[in-house]
Image 1 (cartoon, helix red, strand yellow):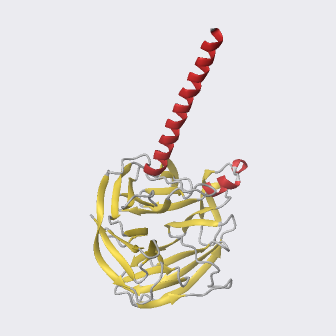
Image 2: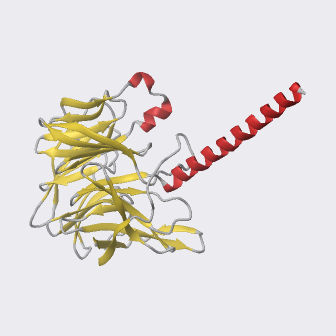
Image 3: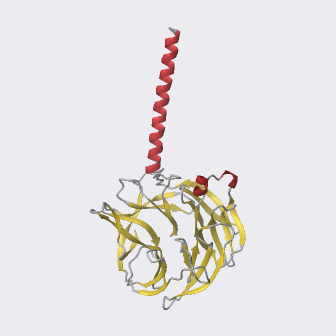
Length: 344
């Protein structure tokens, strides 16, 4: 009799344990796809303002508005192009190689500050500086330097002469350099003794400088670190996870942080959406790291948006559309157009 009771208790224990595990797995799957915020928390949406027909089609990334010009990287031709607002080519910089003014690999992480484009060559840890003529929009080589302390992951400009970068296998999450590429200071230490191959991938961060601080976003782990500036150095305010944190398989499982930028009174984050979603969304955060709702970029099943960039200071963003191809059963880039929209 005692044996039967003991056996029943064991079976009951395993049944309860199984139910708990299934519930936990269900919650984890929900967290992976829905994230930690209500997806109905919509703050605003993009209203199409202008469609630019491109004289030279291509997959455009790092799209900037400088004066009356569009400056972008054309990843189809691996070049930097200056367009007029009507899409006409003004200037194209395309110098492959390893010599002065040449690039082995134009990475997709660069910024324009005060008429200077800072472009990273992650293959050679090189930073190329191009000037943008404020009157004609012509691109010209200005200077270059190398960073010695690891492969460049991202770069942003704090102020003239102060560059903040993230590099692979660095001792710090964020490192400061001068315009000679010399290390100045490091912020946020990294315990490299615990870096497995997977953790090396997950330690890749993208630094985004803002007027009131900076955001350091984990590209592969969805982690968001918000900093303020105290005593002329970044001070960590808080940490959180991106709202949409999508694991899609692979080694390591890839979450969804694709782009971060400062915008008006906070930050915008672009994430890849779970399967079945029909809205391309931006996540909005305050300077202090509080989630502030979603912004709808496109709300149609036959359209998708991959990368969105702030375009000027009037509340506009720039992006290209991916249109659903029924024959190929996949999204295909509309490389002939650039969409300028206003967030309302």
